[in-house]
Image (cartoon, rainbow, N blue to C red):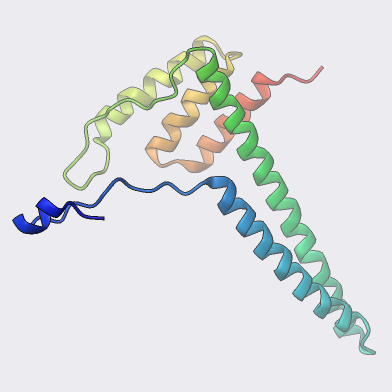
Length: 167
């Protein structure tokens, strides 16, 4: 939707961005995955019914791979839910989860020196209080901000473990 006054001035100003509900996205993707698994499962059982052992083996593989896919999806959903619970807990405890306003280059990427300073601050907080799950949560944010997704996920897993210790 555009502003009528902007139309006359030659400037096109879009309205506010519409956010997609993550729950809707997850449900649609899960539905698509179930349909795919049903279709592939039919093929797997068909191949298991064939006389040649190579086809039976292929049929078994076709049935096992979706099971691995289900395991991966369930693990990712659990990780996402646990991460969300930590973010909500931080907010409930009055701790900010907002990222700092770091300077950016003209391209939109973060100024590396400023990001490094913020990252070092979060790393020092973890070193001072290694049992504090919130410090690990912020370190995960710092890794994510730096573009290191693997370490961000590791730090977030540590935060989840520290926040929910097992007896």
